[in-house]
Structures are given as structure tokens and as C-alpha cells.
Image (tube, rainbow, N blue to C red; front, side, top):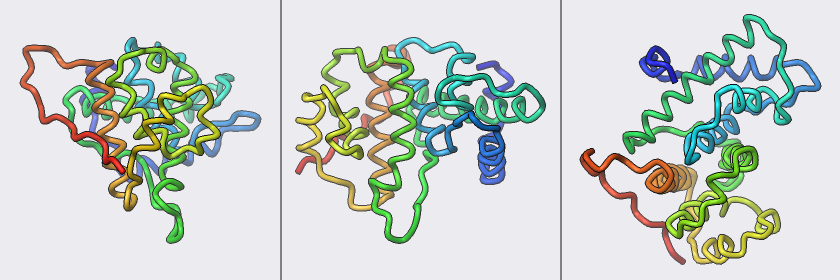
Length: 213
């Protein structure tokens, strides 16, 4: 993150729509993330104990397999928007401040799990690409990770017995707003482990623990 990028304003609705258009316009066979999955992916990248090089994670934004996107003005614009969002979320996590994840109500009948799933899938994609966070054995990581992965089908969580045991104790979110609050809270709890604040910094309010059944 360059100083210039860090000082740019947050992305508004028009910027997000433009970003989605640029992602949609990438040619086959590329398989880009959509904006919700992209947002979860960026959070997963930012919470790594060591930051992955931008070139590595930017390639996965425009194609899930990391195949190169065509160079040109459109790719330059796309990557600039992505890096602005990366800087925006980085500031929020660094300062333990609330931010609005790019999670949307899909339709009137969609429940919280269905609506947050694209975002969680993006976060999981970052965990697959950069496994250092999931390789940590800190007990403080189990509950916040459970808050995120509770939205997956349990059958999709292979070899995650400890995580599944905690998920079974958690109370589902009553609505989408509560689910989003849980996600942001989980991210800040993970950051306390992988990106601890400097001892000299004033301690912010501690995130509340997850709701138990």
C-alpha cells in the first residue's frame, strides 16, 4: 500500500458497480471474483500473519486460477479500484474500526447464510491460496473462524473437527444485519492474533464473544 493509495477516498456505490462491470468484462476462460467474494478475499489476504505480495493476490482477483488478465487500461483501472478497497479495509482493521463488508440482500426470500456465502467463499479462497493463517494453532482463532465458517455446509468443512465442534455451539444470526456484525467482529478478533496492535497504542473496545446456543 503506497501513501497515495492509503489517502484515497472510500469506494462508493458507483465505484463498486464500475468494479463489477470491469470484472464481468474480463474474457473467458478467466474466472474473476465478483465484488462480494472479492471483499471477503481481500479481508483474508489482509489478516495473514505475513502480507502476500500484491502481484500474487491481484492475479487471483481476476482469475481464480491466477491466469494473467489482458494488459491495458481496463486492467489498470480494475486493479486501482481493488487496491483502494484493500487500503480502505486495511485502515479499518489496523485501527479496529467498523467497516461495511460488501454483503448484499440477494432477494426477499434469501436468509442470512445465503446472503453472506459469496463473501465467505471469497474469504475461504484467500485461506486456500495463503494458508499461513489457518496453519496457526492459536486457540483464540477458533471461535472467530467458526463465526465465519458456520455459514458453510458442515460437509464442506473437511478435517475441521475442532471448528465444527465450536460451530455447533453457536447461535445463528437472526437477520442479515446481525450476520454482518458477527463477520466484522470475527475479523477484528482474528486481527488481534495475526495483526496485534502495538503495545503503545490505546486499547480499543474488545469485540464481544459469539452468541452461544
